[in-house]
Amino acid sequence: MLAAMILSFSAAKVETVMAPMPTAFRRCGWLFALAVLVAIWGPQAAAAGSPAAPSSSDGTAALSASHPNSSGGSASDSGAAQDGARPRRPEPPAADPLIPPGKAGHEGAGGAATDGVAPARYRAGRETPASQLLDWLGPLHDMTPGERELSLTTDNSFLDPINWNVTVLKSRHQLVVYYKGRTFKAYHAVFGFHSDGAKRWEGDLRTPEGVYTIIGKYNHPRWKHFLRLNYPNYVDRRNYDAMLHDGVVPVIHGQRRALGSAIGIHGTDRPRFNRDDINWTRGCISVDNDAISELDHLLPIDTLVIIKP
Image (cartoon, rainbow, N blue to C red; front, top):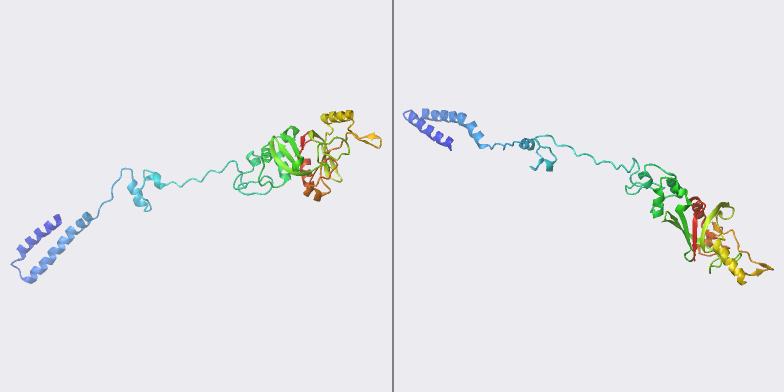
């Protein structure tokens, strides 16, 4: 507005001066006066028409001008530091100290990691004899509680028979192994030809029932491995003596039947009978040949074996 007032005042002065002059001279005067006004007031008018950037005491405006991608938010929201500093690059996530290099994700056999979870033995920081035993068993996809407990064992306690026990369920055709009270693995099993009741004397083709221990481990030409039980135990002898007293023990060819012995867990030379749940032994517990190999490796001598109906 000030520029317009000055322009009108200057025009009036020029008109008064150039009034007595000829028309051609007046036109030249007007053009000269217009050029002088443009040269004087043009840059000031242009400067007055452009708004200045707002100032900031912490230099945020300068940072926004130098970074056109800034959204105008605070320094913490945009990732930039205050006081005009350059934005810091985000730090990479820290590596999991429980998973050694090359062990994350899916691996192979022997308690391998899946979905980025390290095997328990690597979490312990080193391989152990117990983990080597698990490796020998082959790939473990879904670890049982007992297998997991064995993978966490870092000493030689897995060699102690007190940490192992076996439960045999005749009616279910199962032999279940436990490690430190946790289910380790279940195996299919068949038993003596006569399945009605516990063994009473030699030759009755029944499997004993009761509490026993493994007292020997042998290779066997027919059944691959033989884990001998301490049959007859004290209870078996007491029951047999009672049957002798009552005259229940049969007499064959003038001789009474003995109590019997050499009962154990072994493999099979009749795999079809085992698959079909056919009880065919003379009183022992028969499992598949792969199973007896595992049991021979797993179970120390003096392991507790409980046989139930």
